[in-house]
Amino acid sequence: MKTIVVAGGCFWGVEAYMSQIGGIFETKVGYANGKKNNPSYDEVCVGNTGHAEACLITYDEMKVTLEKILNKFWGIIDPTVTNRQGNDIGNQYRSGIYYKDEKDLDIILKTKKETQSRFDKPIVTEVQPLHCFYNAEDYHQKYLQKNPGGYCHINLDN
Image 1: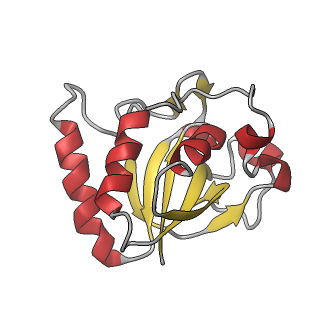
Image 2: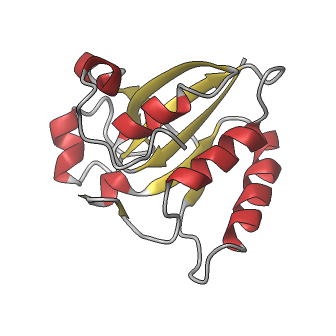
Image 3: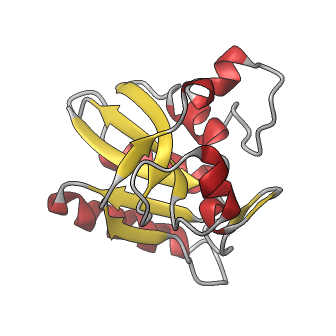
């Protein structure tokens, strides 16, 4: 099993979308690459912890490739906007790809370059090593499964 962390606005929609992809074993929402240990949702929302709302994806690379996962990810975000996705505005809603395995960087950059060809504006999505990931509170996990009418800026039927 391998892991990758992606951020694309509110983590509820990213998690719900990614969990539908075959070969993805598990998804968890949480807070990535900030400066405070174990932040709460309220602290992250204030915007001074530096964390992005993110989704940790554990996948079976024998069943789904990182390239496929990332191509799906690029298709549900606007990678050209800073600190925003849909109606969600703030530093915690920035887009990002955070990797644990240095070998994944070539694939990430390849998909980013391919995606850039579809946009006139430059892609601002962060690509960084994963420094930290803290699970979000239980009520955020599988939120849209538990609350089917909940807010989501992502078309889950893509």
